[in-house]
Image (spheres, rainbow, N blue to C red):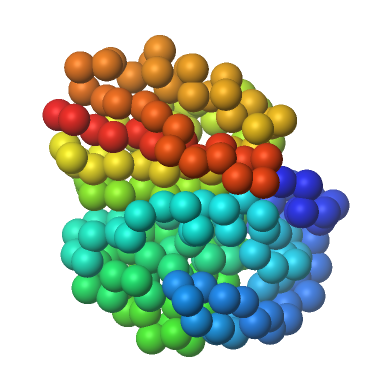
Length: 209
C-alpha cells in the first residue's frame, strides 16, 4: 500500500467511523473507462493508487474460468478488473472493511459483473481454493499481521495456481520476498519477482503441488 491513502482512520478498520462522503469516480480498468463509487474510510478513496496500477499493468491475464481472489479488495479495482477480464470466473473480493465490501458489491453490480462475490475473510469456506490471487496487501497492518494473512491465504492456491502481490520497495518488498521464500516449502512453491516499476515490486508465488 502507498501513502496515497490519507484518511484519518485505518482502511483496515472493520466498521469505519470516518464519514463516507461517497462520490463517483471515472477510472480505467481492463482497458476501458468505468464509473465507480468510492468513499472515505477505505483504501485509496481518491482513485486508483500507484501500487494497484502497477499490479494491473504487470500481471498476466487471469484464467477465463475458475476461482479468482482479490485479497484486500478496498472499493474493488482489482476484483472489478478480474471480473471484466474473466466474466466466466468467480471472483472473490475479500476485505475486513464492511464499507469496502459494500462499495465493491455495488460497483460490480453497476458493471453487470455477476461473478463477483464480496465477503469478509471468515465468510469464505476454509476449503475454498483459488486459481489466481491478486493483491495489493495491507502492509501497514504490521509485519506479523501481514505474514499471518499471507500464510493463511497463499496455501489456498490450487496446484498450478499463482499469486501476484505488489509491494512498495521502501515498505519491505525485498524482505517480504525473502520471508516468502523461507516460509513456503520450496518443493511446493516457487517465489520470484517478475516485475519492478515506479518503486514497486511485483512478487509471484506459484504453487507447484
